Structure formats: structure tokens, C-alpha cells
Length: 525
Image (cartoon, rainbow, N blue to C red; front, side):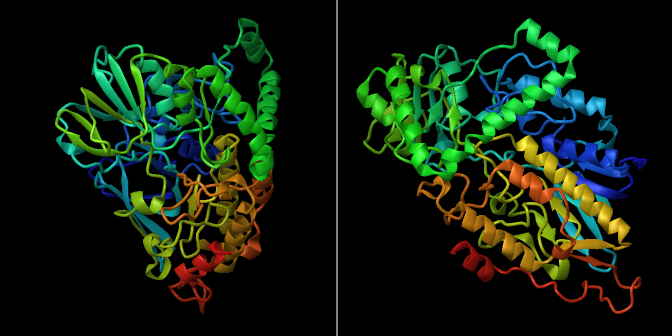
């Protein structure tokens, strides 16, 4: 275990550096420990573990995956009170697991990573933080996740509005909403949770909707005392319940693969909307015009009934501008406001939130240049010309039907196997071959064809240019099968100069990137 020096010592050497202390970073740390790799550090920009569950504590915040599935398979819990856990239970679970596996001593809080540069000669990464610390590491793991940078709209006059403005991920619980005139901008996963909660408190609530969302009913049942006793007394029942949740979720992938089945689901959901929304005009505005599953499917029993309230208005006209006292829509109508809540989600495209982040690999390659067309990575984990760098929840590994924790565990196991291989082969680094990346991207692109994700709508799964970079377009068990073993033929194992005659400091031959033009050709197949 590395004994961390005092903050005055600026350079520290570790075997593994991890960026992010959310579900991904914590899982990675535990898997490393289980493999006997204890010389690691987690660099976390916040002041506590938890990531998105530390930051998102707005009213009604909860998970849209079942509690027993939204947890690690190796650390199941009997403490869940509901089928779908609220944010505070998930955050407490993360803290409990952190304590159970004694991970906290390896975490450096308030250390946002601002630079990571690979040294061709030594095979090491130099990782720097905004707090002035520098880490030299052999292996570098990005576990920051895609939901940590709030997306804030650029609307004329917003900075001139004199009332309260807050993003859902930066909720100010000291601000009193009772009796206030409030505007909620956005109708995504956060808004459908907090809007029903604040509607009874406020004087008037204007919900600004750009695109209607498909919303399915939510199982709000609490676990009975007997169920919790059973989960606590017989841990195997937790595992069995988890697997039932897994296969229930996995069955939802078939309508995604077959838009005809999705249309059957649309028929029943339209009946659900008609049952819950009384006004036919309002009902039409709340009914999506795109294929079920093309955008993220949301779950709520409270969303649609909220619009039956007299103090709630659904606004579908575009916003023209803010004034110091309210919002003016394009029809010229002004609505006076005390508070604006931005339910506008997160910046998911890493090319945007990593714009100022220096990430430099072999031969001067930068992630900004190599991802010019679209973010991409082999299995969503490794990228050519970025040796010993690994990603959790990277490109092509997001889900629309099951738990991302399942994917994280598969990725963490795969990364540990890569690290073991580097040591077993007495190499300095492992680097995925460009042709392996090209092949994988082609497979993903082909698999997306014919799915609901390719049915024409725009979503946060895509780049601004319309390339779907976020979604894994197959079943999760297929991903688990593909990551169980490292295909050594898809990688180069390299010793740095001075250790092996004939190998240059740039890593020898075969280091050409999959350039922007090649990526574009594959994406257009």
C-alpha cells in the first residue's frame, strides 16, 4: 500500500490511478484489492464518495433500476426499503461498501484531474490535479462516468434573470419554494421526479417541454418486514431476487431490437396516458411522436397526474428570451417568475466536457483529435495509442434496458485481467491495435441498424452530428461474454526503450491511430 506523503510533496508514484469515486471508481478499487493490487489512488473532484448520487439530491430523486439490481453482485444489501431506491439509500450503500472494503484511505478528495500525459520512454502516465498534486502511474483509469457535468442551456437573457436559478444537480434546499412562481425547463429523467414533488408547494409551476417522453408506470411497493428479514437471514434470497430482476430487465431488450414490438408497447402506454390525463389537448402534447425506446424511457406514477393540477401549466412554445423578471416565449407571452429550475440533464459527449482536459497518449496523440468524429473505444474500455489507459462506462457501453452496474463489474474485471497480462508478459504497457478498434466499431454500428435507436429521433445517446456513441446495442450478457477474457491478439504488449533492444521509445510499429476519416467511414456503414 502506498503511504501518501503530506500535501507538500508534489509528485507521488502509484501503480494505478483512478479518476472518480462513484460506482465505477469504487468497483475498480475493490476489484484491484481482490487481485492483490493495493498500490492505487482514487482522485475525486468532490469531497465525498458517490459521484452522481452524492450530487443529485433534488426532491424525489431515485433510481430507475431496481434496488437489488442497482448494486454490486459481490456486495448485495438487505437494507433496501423499496423496489426502486431513493437517492439517499443509494448514497448510503456506496458509503457502506466503501467502509466494508476499506477503500477510503486510498481516496484523495477535492482533486479534480486536469491532465494525463503518457511518457513513451518510461511507459508511465503523469496525472495532474487542479489541487496541484502530480501522480506518476503505470495504469490510468477513467471512472468519472457520463453524468457529472450539468448541462446548462444558453438562452438569451438567462444571466440577467434576477430570480433564483438552480440546476437539478445543484439543488439548493435552503431556498423556499412554497408560494413561488416557478419554471422548470426540461422534461427528462430528473424533471419527471422533482416536478410532481414541488407542484403541491408552489403557487404556479410552468413546465417547459421541448420533446415529450415515454413514461411507464413505476413499482413503488416497499419491501415487507418479512422480505427484509428473509434477505438478511438468507443471503441467497438476495442473489435469487437480483437475478429475477436481471432477467426481467433483459427481456425488455426485445422491443428495442424490434420496433414492431415497440409499437405494441406504445399502444398500451397511450392508454396509460389517456387514463391519467383528463384534457385531450394536454394529453396530445404529452404523447411522444417517436418510437418507444429511441430516447430514454422514464418511469413514474406521478408525472402525468401532475398536469391535472390547476397550478401546473405545460408549455410547448419555444423560449425566446429571459427578462429580469420572467420568461418570454416565441408567441410573445411573458410569464413572471421567482425561480427557474434547470432540469436539462448532463453533458454526456466527452468531447465537450473534456475540451479543456489534456489527455495525451503515444506520439503526441490527443483524445480531442482522435475523437474528432465521435468518441469510440474497443469494448468501451481501451483506445489505440493510449497505452495502459482504461475507461469505465466508456463509449458504446450505455444501456437502455438494464443496470449499468452489471456493465461496470464486467469492465472492472476486464481491466484487472489486462493489468495482470502486462505483468505476466513483463511488458511496460498494453495498447489495443487500431484494427481491433475499427472492427469493434463496425460491429456496434451494424448492430444498431434496425433498432429503435436508429429510428430517427435525436437523443443524448448521440453526438451533435447524429452518431450514436453511447449505447451498447446488444444484450448485457453478450457484453459479459465478450469481456470475460482478454483477446491478446487484439493488443500489443510493449517494453520501453532500454529494456528490449530494437523497440523505440515511441513503442515500435503499428501505432497509427484510427483517424477521423476511418471512423467516419465505419460510422456511415
